[in-house]
Image (cartoon, rainbow, N blue to C red; front, side):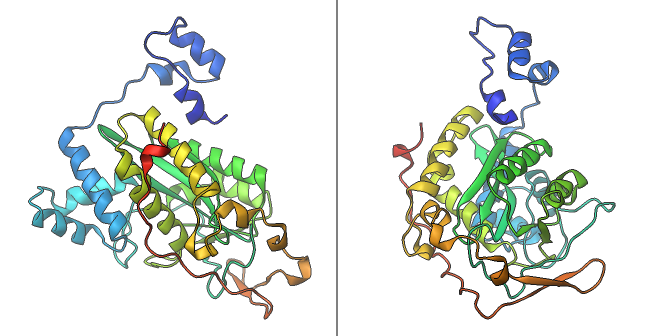
Length: 325
């Protein structure tokens, strides 16, 4: 059970067990349960929620365009404030320009390995990313690992902070299920951290990172976030972290197991991911790599690769009332 799931089991009011005993039973730090974060102002929450809506619809917007959009709507937030909010939300425009999701200068950056490559079978290419999930009086962060061929969500987690722990939990759960050939991410500090990278390298995974200002490098995960927000988060309007966890658990299970995906010929992601006929081919048919120098790997395509399935159209609205607990 992940830390987020254990925290969700804590009963702060009306429990017969004091917090100290609950913390011990759940393997949690007692001090972390006593800490009560300072609640953000209603104005900050409203601005961040609107930034999230704009960014989800136009992920190529940077801080300048978002600030200009807010001004047109008579929302008082200058560009510096928008930059600060986006940094706290963990988002940055995917157009060329100032990069708000900065990596630690001491961390190693890996090249983007997917130029000219399309996903040809499950567990060939995985992508990982983090997105902002709004609540009525705050927000959470959702991290997910997505199989690019099947669009299957291999693992995911919610947390109320951007600490690296919930990312590492997701990585461990995903690698316990399967090991991909290539694992792609952006260049944010979570994904350049040695604690994250070492886990991938220990499983002989090839690490790939988006280039700066490349709108299409992580397109499948960006589409997943858009779908999750339009079909569930915006409609459900979650009030508490517990409600968000319950609702997203229900929706993401629906997404994997029940929701027909247009790009998959109206099959579900789970049907494609677990289809034995689409399993990883024998080593002789897998993509070969050659090392050009000490830091750059370039893929060498094989003529027998399968073409990529057609990208999905904008999502249809999802009736959250049937799936949100």
